[in-house]
Length: 445
Image (cartoon, rainbow, N blue to C red; front, side):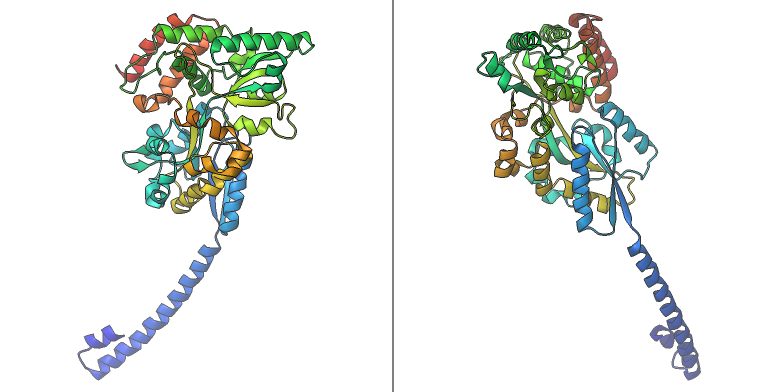
């Protein structure tokens, strides 16, 4: 009204007309405001749905649902759906890529492997833009560095992993052993002795050692541990040198092939994490290689081996020291999410101190927050977090950085090559000669 009056130049008639026009404008504005208020109320009433694509191994889905429930209780108006994904990481990655290629908004928060940030960075938001900078310093520096691509934080660390050796304390005592094996040779001898003894007492389903032998990323982890423990390198070195074709790597993989059908079942070449755990937790194995998540499940009320096992570092080869592959998962927010701010808030909530503590106690999932390794309640639930702390912080990384963005192809070539040795198709020296050429093609060297 003031603007219109000023434009009237002091003419009373024009001013009056202008005032009348202003009244009309005011009425229109009032109607528009009422409409806007109604629209805002409707928008506020509209529920935001966030979808988490997470894992299902062990208790993962249940633990993820629990944190989702707590977030929803604190954030009314937001509903969270936990979406099941395949157990094998290759299949899960395929699911993710289908969504990303379609730029689908169907996923908001994605659980991503420690080896994926470099390959998938283009599909995720920079969590530094959503408050992650305030908490990044609480996490292991190496994992934050791993998850940072071109200065952007692609994923907030959720839990970390390293391969461990599980062993039956009661059976070691029964057969006169003072502690777990320090070398792979010792493991072979102990596993065979215990296996023979248990079968002689009637358990024909008993095996000495179970592990992950299927042709998938889990075998890359197991085989890297064998090779690194035997001074055989890390497949592709940090400077990009392809190192797999060497006598130390071939010797230890040939040795592992000798376990199949002797101290390990023939079917171990089709085993994933849960296959190994199920056999172990049923009381049918003396030793198992697996991740920390199996600890709490093994001590559950319905477990026949509860209180009868412990964990230690994996055995050594010629290097004199065992090696554990670095694992772990991060939470990333899709660029295609319709609600990136809320999704980032959810991711940071899930990775917070309290939620990592809950998962550590309930699921023996290793925290990425340094202070939790001094938390009395965490150490009471999972004592090995403290005693094996050095294993976790010194774990061997897969060559995902050195081979990005071709790591998935490199890993597939590697685990298929190792699998061919385990199944008796060829010896390791021959397999790794061919693998070296394949990696040269993949990496264009």
